[in-house]
Length: 468
Image (cartoon, rainbow, N blue to C red; front, side, top):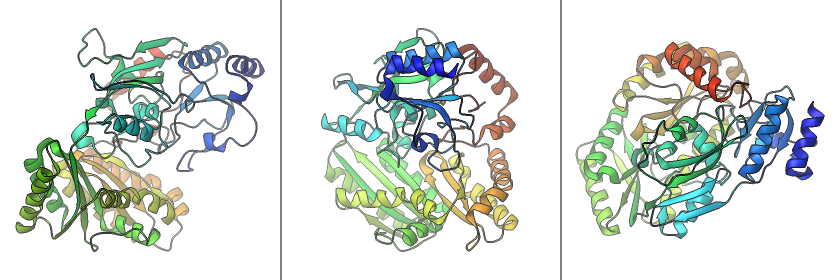
């Protein structure tokens, strides 16, 4: 059966696009190096029609398919299992911008387009595609849509779901749903687009998307602010929202230990403020002028200083300085990698309850695991924390992860549930959080999800073992 399938795939795609021998670790090993799989073959279609051919062949042979974009996911959702029986379908060859419509403020693209390339294509037309995250140089828009990625500008522009108007999807049966609409109003039945966004490749394979664009801001102002407490960071958020309104496009929180890891592992990166309990990176975009943005920003920070909301601030005076501030923020995950394996939590909470959650959960973890180090950073403006737990200094990070992950997760996720939050804000479920989802999602919700999965993928061929 496998030989017949592989022969059919080679006839459909060409021998060079069906890889079954050699080193395939770049496809079979996830970004965090936690999940190592083995594919029957890696196939690399170059068009939606070829993706459909692959699905029809796999459906005929009852072989599972794992879709993959840039393989930058953090929950093990885009690598095959260890059975050697699954097809890994890479969309990286499908990387064309199909159409850019400045008048309609839309861009239609292949799913394999790298996010940074889409940002640049929009910028060349004087427009903005606002999705931005640390992996933007390698993640693909299909993966961003499949996981409903968030990033640093959700506060103003929303998650990837809010940036998408239409999709093109290949179904489990190998049919093509052509839903690449550039319409902002279309009430003609169920919203299939939203069904596939965030489904992590378990309901269909996203092959194309029509995305929203925005006029490029006339000016951007970026600053770091030193906050003595989490409550003061929350007060700064409220003040910034009051003064800037929708112009507030970024509000990132960084705990002192998170930034200390950047200082330790990337000592050449300049940090504009001395160490403090909490540092906020805030960004304001302005549609009027640079002078207007600067006046707004300076007034905001002066008020915050006068009222004791912040203790110090550093304002970027150039685009280069702004990029440097963001680079420090985006280097936190890389510094964690250098420090050693850690227990990651991508959680969402009501913004107003974050200080109380952090105080209670920090205390519970430190009591249960003396010496544990907490790497807390994230998108305070939209309530998304990357609340990560590092082993005690001098201990084995790998041993701590292996032996304590379940107990750490129980403390953190119990607290998240008690504070009416979510165990996954923007990374998805994949296989890492599948069992946790089964415990914490309502039975009614899980029943509806399984019914949808059964209806769209009755053979269970699309990314099995993920989400459900």
